[in-house]
Image (tube, rainbow, N blue to C red; front, side):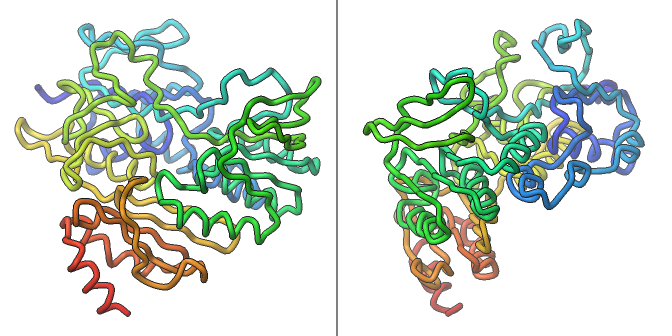
Length: 404
């Protein structure tokens, strides 16, 4: 395709802003650059929403990715508080909620994901999901009233909310459908170590617990579990994962399958790229298609998309990466590398699960595919090149031995 004169970016969060900056960087792209965001806020950072902002340690302004004047200095056609409603790929137009249509030569899809909700959730006050800055501020205000808190879902977001609420001295119940927190992504053994930490801090952690319903009058009063037991709660935060925001792309001609399906260069169609939570691409490091919901993945993909979009024909590079994610809970730092799955074999490489200072490795088909640590980040980082190079497990054990 010829070099674009008009680029539209749909999604004005981390991925959209960083891609815009990469396109403008060093004078690479001087044409019309439209940035469309459904929220009215200038682009802000999401990780603090379940930590520093929720805990009241930060004000909302501290979550901004860049000061507004720096964003304005990019010379963007900035459309905030406007939702993309459909894509006409043939006409190269995005239809907006306000009725306008934005034309483009190249399109970048960075619409992220939306929280999943429990089926048949009643319309009661006090039931929340956490994805946006407004969500975080509403939950923060509710926490200040001293409620009994039930958190449904013990993934990173749910566990972080539980840690913030418990650290504020509130009565907290953490409800997880799986045998342990993080069981699907980190394994049951690691998940049980995390559950033990929360229990030691006074959280009532209930695993293998399915939610049958939520009850109350005008506001929530209790969560009913499938075994018939109940959890009294004035505040319920549901953190059961997210779904990629692709509804506006239905009928566009793009392939949608738990995200926008892209090739290894992050291209979904000629001149159309996706990145971040909404992007499903072929990752050569793991020889498989994947969708990754991590902050660092967005940063790296935004740079690659900017480069590939402006590259000469045939010069687009594949995006080969080792995903990385972290979570802070109480005084615990959890960090994970790679792409572990629930059925991978797990082995402790350093420390011990009981001490809550360890590194575990994940083995699949005889090679290392991931690593995770509680409070041993330096040791974990040494495994990144081993994961990237698809290192056989025997060599991984030799590396662990040499580091001990």
